[in-house]
Length: 537
Image (cartoon, rainbow, N blue to C red; front, side):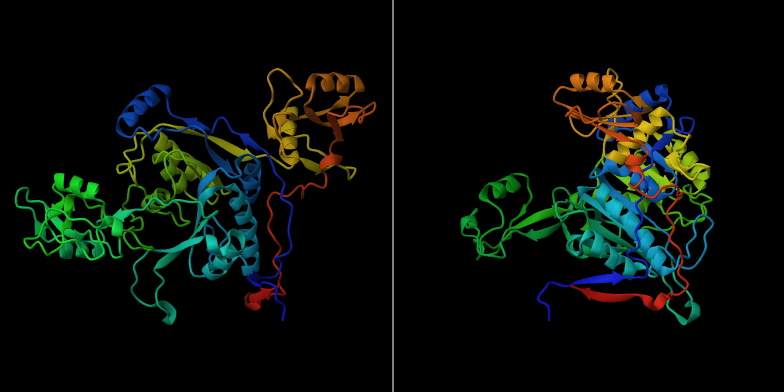
């Protein structure tokens, strides 16, 4: 038997069939981009900063229409390692067809679609970031193993069960499914969780009833007695205090803390000096019990709710997303949802002072997301978390459409640059393909992008002559310039700090061109029973 380490792997038909995704550009639709009225914004800012100074309305949010795999690839170069929290609610693959999603993919295709998107999402996550994936029991187990493979099993934080519906009769001789799963992964082990405490659930209320059974005579405040003796030997914390017996293992607090709590009236002294001193924890200062992974207190949106929309694809309550973002983010952090649906994640992130990117391929981005987010900005959305988040309105977003494919086939069968690309668009596209950041220099027209302080790129469809190369080489000094051009004359290797590449030849093999999306073909010769777990050397 091989002594090599083995790993558990989920295999499926077509797993090794990969496509090189084209990194398309994003084109802003200025008419659909939206921001608060300047006068209203000034008033809202003033009110907001007085109440919640850390929550500032932001304007660099992005609403993107198009295939989410292509859109994620378009974001990858600029946003890798910058997203703090990702929440996605992908199609559950139940076999049912919703109005806005084809939710009946064959299992192997569904896994490939998820794998391709999750790999890019991982790249986008910050090192201390999280991803939350909501799913039901149809694909949950397969998705868990897939995520273990992509994110690492050690980076699995928890699975959250959300009770999303009540149960009554058992359909089809089975128990009613009333929960969704939310798989929670981190990018690495370098993360912090913002713990949430609850006072309202049944367990906490029972705990309060049993423990907070003391009343302070002077104030009438209810409190519980909390031990301050150490469970393990602490020689450095062994001391006498006001004649009371020192606990066997010493105290869990220092003498300085003991004196401070005494001055604040937070100590409970027993009548007998042989008994232990306790700390008072007042009910009116009690935050509650930390929440666990079973969420039964967040209700689905009822038909009469103010946040109810006409979206039929499973609108999530804002309270659910609020809890996730509270656990994983702080004001100003970047949040991404690549299955935006009705726009809930973007709406909640906006109200909570987080920056956001939302991607949706369906036309309901126009009918649902756009008007909803405009209402949020104008503070005309009274539902959801508006009141609890103290949302006053403001901020904005830019609306983007995915650019068309860069390379097309002409009538002669040749691969050429699409005539839909103007010079600026072409320059941006070449930056993405060559690994440069598009940032046109105001003084030097040939500095259209950069990869470092001294490495630049210039794209033109014109003929580049040797005289121009000489001028650029001298201006660069110890810098380097990549020139992508339609044609050139002279010796392109004459200058050490300049590299010349001809387009489109330089990029033809970079990726797969001409696809509106990347669906995989359904294989009719495989059935749902072809999944297996394999020990791979």
